[in-house]
Image (cartoon, rainbow, N blue to C red; front, top):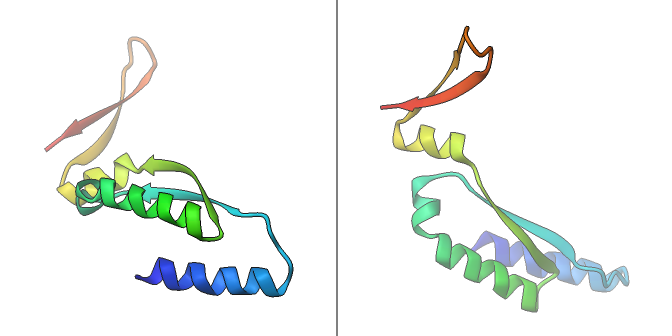
Length: 91
């Protein structure tokens, strides 16, 4: 896993430079596979928080990229009556 290799290299560099403060880790889930693996992804984030140079700060769900991944197109439609911009999804 690339993230663990990166975490190990970062931890080593931080130790060499006497940096003790952890970095905030924000996980982005933007695909159907990511959503299906969300539990494992979050577990790995917690694991990196405990043993690595990161502090799990949050998880972001990228709905637009997710919709594109599963084939739903986002359409913005202008409502002339209320002058609000509304988002509609359709397949």
